[in-house]
Amino acid sequence: MKFSQDLRSESAFMLTNVALLLQRFALSYFKEGLCIEYFIHNRFSSETISHSLVFSFNPQAKDLHVSRFYPELYLQSNPKYLSAACFYLLVHHFANAYSLDNACHISLETVPTVSDTFYKKLKDFNFHVNKLDLGNVVALVSDMIRIPVDTHMIEEHIFDEDEVPFLK
Image (spheres, rainbow, N blue to C red):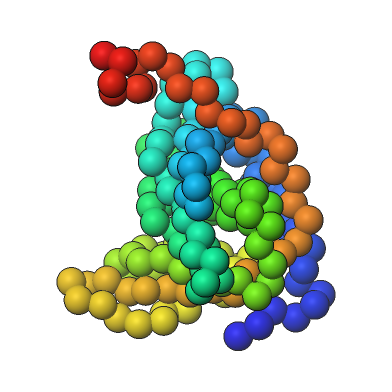
């Protein structure tokens, strides 16, 4: 299913919830080859809320693959819609970083419950089941719909000494 042309601007839902996310949290990234790892930090305490949010790109398949997205924002106070806003921002940041276009798609694997309660409810994407895998896993896919989204606030991650295992 392709999106119609009139849906190619930022939704009011995302504009509102991205602003709420960014009031409370800072996002950073570490890019290596065709992968980016994202980090979420509490804006006021600098505590790392989440790390190892990993996206990768397969240029031959034109696939932005969400290798790991478990932002742990649900553990924060008033978490409603923060994970959706985070996912939205990270997809657009990644797409900007690798100059992805609408010929690309987004893929990921998850469990049916998360598919139904999170990914399929994201109105700014059109996730649908691509296939069912062994072990209660579903492979989801969505079209890549490029719209101008400001992601400049996602800064390059500077590793602290205690984050780099070989320095311990």
